[in-house]
Length: 453
Image (cartoon, rainbow, N blue to C red; front, top):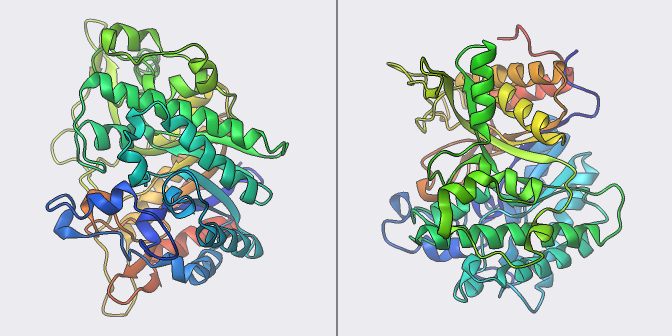
């Protein structure tokens, strides 16, 4: 069977991680611009001020996408590059950049997929309370409206928020990411509620264009419970655990998928969080629960579970000497089978794998090339699992590898390399890694992954 006709083979990036030009052409400050200036916040004091200089090199980068053979590219739009203060006056130079990028992509035969928010919240709006301020949903809706009116005729695939579970929790609970807050549970949940409202209002702004072929979705990070065996009892335990919450788990799928897709908070949320649940005003849940065309899933993490001897769910140990990426994340390719499968079964929405990839220890070799056999193996294993899910009836429409190129990896700075393209950050020279050429061969052949090595 292989992958279906029209499958989107892509790669993904985010504005702050690659664009640079942090203070050029009228761009306003984001919370990440400010957070990176805080001593000790980012590895070795790295910043996104220059990053991959994509703002000036986008034509070169689109040419690389075409050389690889991508037919899709997921990128994010920088809110403060469009509206420097977050609201109010439009920065024409900023919006013009994205128009030129989209036109370049279309000319290269690459479908643009735009993410409205990938963590670079306008700093001036953060000073007014950020996501804790109920008005944040309307601020975001105004921004979404501006972008949709200018780009909606050329972009058909839209994602409102990237990984709300990550930017809310790491930015507002642990303080590890911008803006570096350590709020109490009730405040964190209120931030999440306002982000969900912002998502819903952004979908409304996109729908207002009246374009019948426009598709809108959201892309949380999916934490997958993989059954330890394919015994029906273990499968049922895993299925239930993917969408249940028995304790205060701020990363639970029961919050980040269930709420925006169904337009309601699960009973588990009310039972576990009790009085810490956000203040809900009449109409909020209707706004949040806007009908979606697809669900995006960023997939990196999972753990194996089984039905324990007492009948209760049991999380299995990683074991001695587990297979780990350079970032020390567990290699568990089955997440790309079970994750989409469980999502599609539950929500009956087409699925896009909006991110999947690994940080790898790769560098320029003596021969001038970048050899990354681990990434080739990673891609092969994961696409085999994804193909299996599709073969068995899961409606998966596309796969976006993270990332197109090595970039600024948030609090880890330039320590972690996720790219198909190697970037020398001193010279900005790009080199296609072996994995980029392998991925291009997969795309060009449209072949089955089963049995590949």
